Image 1: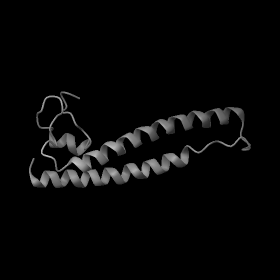
Image 2 (image 1 turned 180 degrees about the vertical axis):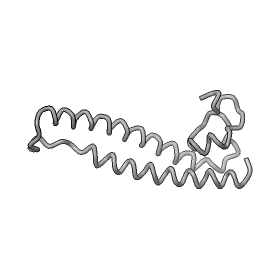
Image 3 (image 1 turned 90 degrees about the vertical axis):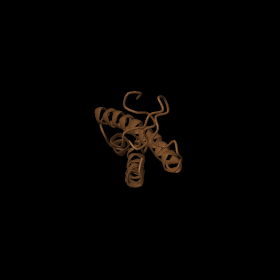
Image 4 (image 1 turned 180 degrees about the horizontal axis):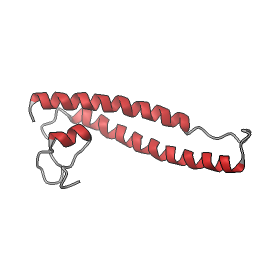
Length: 109
């Protein structure tokens, strides 16, 4: 991997970190408890509880992605960065640009 590709990936990681942090903030606001004092109907309350469950799942997924992105940002200067952990081949730059936290190539994923 050459220097310009590495810089592109670093920039992509920074953007993904910012977007993921914003998503986590948004999801945390949406997962606030539903107060029983709110005057909403039973069906609406059940719908709100269901939506809250969906948002909580998205929050967990975003938090996991944030962890992976932070780890990748820390390890980007390692000589093994961009190498598949399973088959030890180079992960294509296109895959790293789409999913910068990738540790496996397309064939091994």
